Length: 404
Image (cartoon, rainbow, N blue to C red; front, side):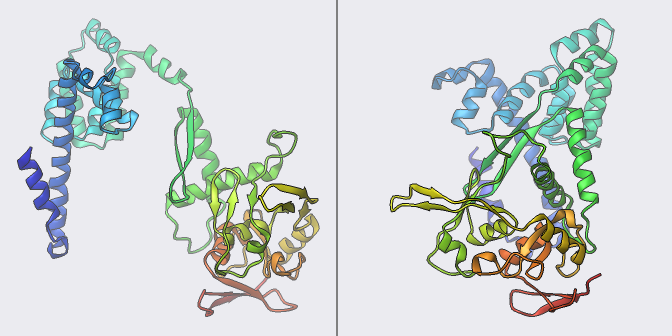
């Protein structure tokens, strides 16, 4: 192990800037193979420790529990390491390919995951040679990516255990979790059955295809993430969701009035806060307040609420409709996002004295609404016309956008 550590130290000291493109690619390939071999060695050691119940030394109830507690390994990775090690003992060809670094831990997992004792017994009863199957799947893993290998394994399962595939199809468990990170971002994690995943994929695809402005350089993952948010916003705006404690579900933003009314970038003001996700920048709160119902809450010196005023809606349905007719789509330079994907933006925010009317209103898609508030971009309409101008944070104009 000391030699391995020395090699890793030597690797960390390489000046990658001095390597040619060819050398970088060669090094990458070597590291992938080495990483596979280390993963295989770890799986073998985990299996040995599991068989000897070495985890009891530290009071753990299982090898999975020890990996999670002592190595801070994610639960699904701990499960995969233990299960893969157990089943690889029955698949020497796959195990050898893994040990040689020819296949990855993901390949080994998709093969061993389907090799349950019941299926192996069914294969034996049907006269299927496990050694031959092992060799075929190992070769398949050497030549294909893990998801393609998984298709080959599923084809084998369908032939050996058709009832088992029905059991898999009947597993409609769906899991989804959301957690806020230390950086204020929200992290998503989950899994769906095939039908549930197809529903979500189809809905997101429809939203993505309907919101692709010319020159859009967002990645597929970025567009899919925005489509997921749009799906949630559409459900909230439509008003068809169940009521929560007697009222329509809504996003709650709390911010001090002085912070809300302060100019962009003003020092000495704390940000706002979302009901679940937590703290946000004051400018984010102003953006969300552009097109929202606003309630005044007066608090005492201790911060406890003393009085709550009546909610005021901005803008009215009539004003919104008139702005949609005038602008037709997002007014940010080069964007043609449709009105249904746009927010009502106050050119002069109502917290700074700007009125909620057509002259002070503009359609901005969420992406460009964020760019104007948090990004410092600006928009301005020529009085009495439908021509909008977009300005960079430094005040220079991008280009003018003529109205319909």
